[in-house]
Image (cartoon, rainbow, N blue to C red):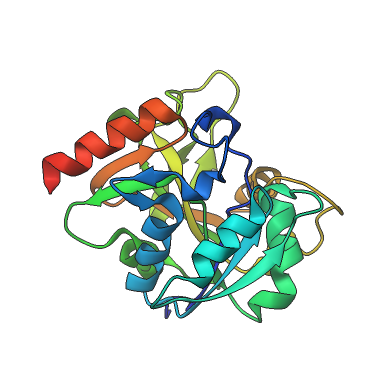
Length: 239
């Protein structure tokens, strides 16, 4: 299957754990290695062949919109306005459905930085993606070697790449790192207002419709000021 050329970039979060860096800007504009988080992600998506991206706006919406309008190069950007109320991951994707068009899209958070070892991580996700077998294809990483994610993990990868979410009390070997492919229709029946994608993923996983892949690399969740410094140090080591 060919990879999507449209993406949804989830950039509406308040970034409360990132304070004081987010006292005057959205989390998406916090810089790592001299570049805003959102630019790191948009460049990754452009390298994956994404020609058009929808970005949702809430915290410091005017500042983020101005930054993105001044950006040159792909992908071309459209905005989903959540100034009135942030809608979380599921609600944000649902609101953007009219802007995304038909068919599967990339969906990406803005708070993961990674260093690739070999194959492009997005290429690994695209290679596994098969809408006949799955509704969601997640980019995953080993819990043990990733930085800034919770230690107990999120999921197991089973035969063929099928994903099983951990049960209470389990330790899972993989974490979700904030990028996936899905058909936005998976959230079309979701509630009005704010809701998370996680509950929908769990339901789809029970039906065997969630898959994932964990390509080699160094994965860093940039969720607070200390994580910014850690990520910058790792980037300098590989420069």
